[in-house]
Length: 59
Image 1 (cartoon, one colour):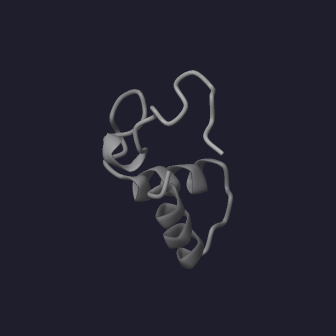
Image 2 (cartoon, one colour):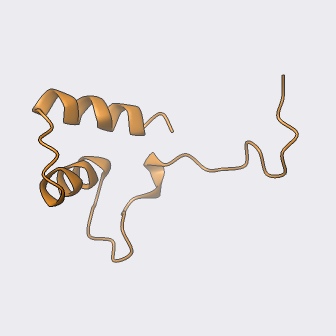
């Protein structure tokens, strides 16, 4: 079933929109994940970071 919401499906993919953050300080999604992991003490493993970046690239 297709969405009838205005603008549905019009959003551009997330990954090609680099650089990220208001000041462009994150050159890629891996840098974004690293920033949040450090800033908020999330404690992602290396594999979790890789997996999260892979997921974000699908958006």
